[in-house]
View 1 (cartoon, rainbow, N blue to C red):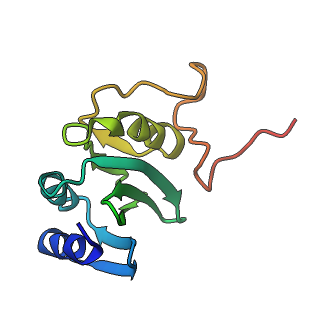
View 2: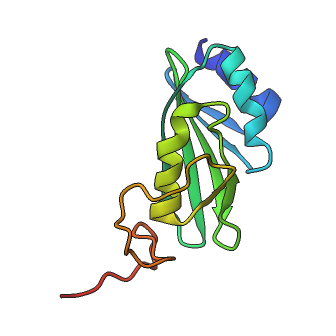
Length: 143
């Protein structure tokens, strides 16, 4: 699919999309609608989720799904209010998301609902509950 075809598909499901270059697309959605797009992407031949990243923006956490749409890269951004840091898993559609979603839960405190394996990935077992090291308000102990 070329960038325009991917953009048209996104517009039909979630709305806002920008074609930044021939090979780079940025889309935004809300957490209720973004999953509607994912099966359509798969049917259109987009089968590779490159990664999921999370960014603490102060009053919200952005969750960005990066898809390889050959030849374009799609970055799909969902902004979650820190008052409601919940999003539904995509592992049923893209099984490779399992580790990335665990990273979101552990490092940023995003609750990924329906996740098949929500145990810790990187942090030790004795790490304090509710302490998420990639959050802006995280306090590091001085030694």
